[in-house]
Length: 145
Image (cartoon, rainbow, N blue to C red; front, top):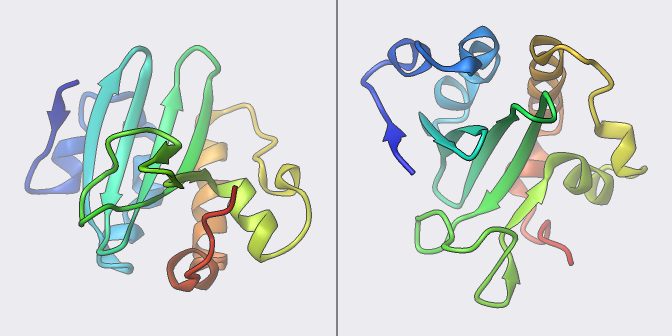
């Protein structure tokens, strides 16, 4: 899996499918102080990752499904976990809608974008990240089974 990094976010976004909607998430660097974006491609999925001190935000574009998925990742020793959903016996990745249903209430489906275009999906998920920032960043018990 080859990673692409650059000194400016604009350089990273060029040449990737996410270039149409990646700007919606630039606030993760400028406002949340996360490092990124780092872009990876693997098996039809393009992922933009922003790394914080304790968590990372992964925005995945799945070409087959034509959907954007946003995951909150609990870092292990400041690094992305080796495994996907569970690593070393603990949940380390959770989809944003599931996380929000636990900390803000409701069903995960209440937080899933109903839009078909990637730009609209990105705009909606970026808005959810901003609105529920405290829930995402400050909650210590958000990783649930």
